[in-house]
Image 1 (tube, rainbow, N blue to C red):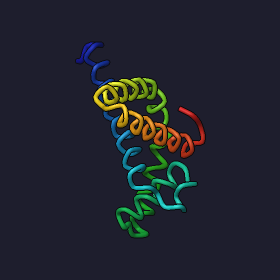
Image 2 (image 1 turned 60 degrees about the vertical axis):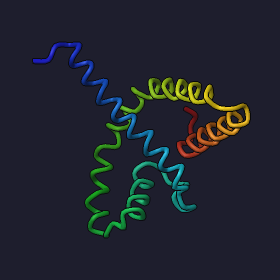
Image 3 (image 1 turned 180 degrees about the horizontal axis):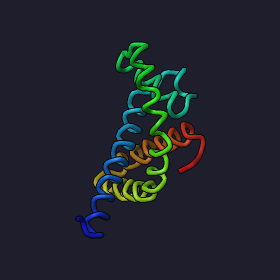
Length: 129
C-alpha cells in the first residue's frame, strides 16, 4: 500500500502529465493556426473538427470518438482547474528564464509572442487565465 506522500507524488505526477499534454495541445493549436471555421468552436466540437481534419477520421471513427471526448471532458476540466495555477506559475518562470537569455531586441519580440499567445488563449476560451 502506498503511503500518503507517495500517493501525493503520484497524483502530482499525473497532474503534471495532464497539464503538459494540455500545454502541448495549446502550443500545437497555435502553430497549426486553426481554420476560420474551427476558431469559434469550443471544447469537444473543436477537438472533433481538429481530429477529423488532422487525422482524416471516417464518419464511423467520428461517431466512436465523440462520446469518448464528451465522457471525459468534465473530468479534464476539473483536473485542469486544479493544476492551472501551477502551470501558470511554471509558465511565468519559464518565460523569465528564457527572456534572461535573450538580447534586448529578442526579448521584445519574445514578449510580443507571449502576449499574442495569451490573447489567443483568452479569445479561444472566452475568459482570461
